[in-house]
Length: 258
Ligand code: NDP
Ligand code: 8X3
Image 1 (cartoon, protein in one colour):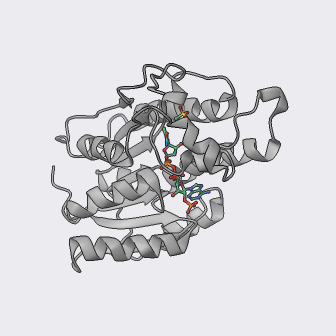
Image 2: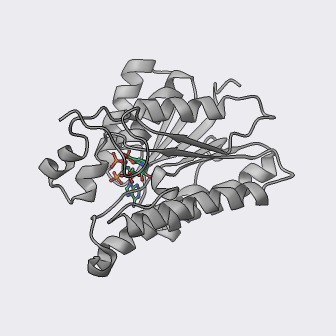
Image 3: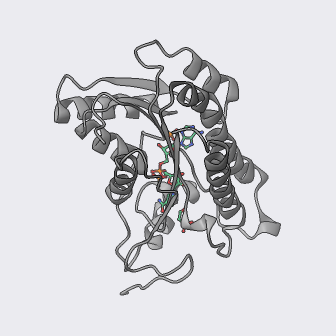
């Protein structure tokens, strides 16, 4: 399936997996709506994409906090006709906060994860998918996690949000049965991005240790899989892909060389 001129909305495009998705879709000639809170990052990315893939690339930047339901509603409903017919929604915005035992957990961390990973993904889906159903075309890709399949110590609430994403993807697919709209959950293991810096509230030393002695996945590895899923023939719905580094066997079992 060609993505030329298809409209792709990517949340969390300012970093990591979202940025890598923006590159792969830009390369395929898609029209990009890039959303995140850090607008300057989006502007930088927009410039970089135009330099790399040419001036004909069409990009629309959205400064958006996915936790804010009314902001999501106006961002989607106020898209100009040139941008409103979204073909592919990549629900990627997400984060982990802390690695505390549940009974020591920080309420603010919990709320941030639940509001972003679950409610934010739901808001985008709720405002974008009706148009897909009306137009008889569309694909929703949710970025889940191995954490939605297996819980690890200290992962509690983050794992809960990703288990919710997995259930929501499954439920959305069921509810869209009878329409041509496809649903995919791409569920990575360890990917080196800003994810661990964010989890540890900017403690970069602690973040680096997460990947020490092993070879993690890259954001481009995930973007490749997303791209593969959305370019299958329209009869094919890839429902779930779990991908891990060769050095990772489960959420808790990794091989470190030092
Ligand atoms: P990064 O921290 O590099 O990127 C996270 C992105 O999410 C940023 O662009 C950030 O943008 C955006 N984001 C966070 N909160 C909000 C919000 N409230 N509103 C809008 N955008 C938001 O991490 P990753 O690229 O690794 O994470 C992307 C997704 O992949 C997440 O859903 C994560 O859970 C998932 N994942 C990551 C794995 C990993 O090991 N890295 C493994 C499995 C899944 P900004 O701050 O500018 O708003
Ligand atoms: C991110 C991967 O293992 O840190 O979802 O939860 S993990």
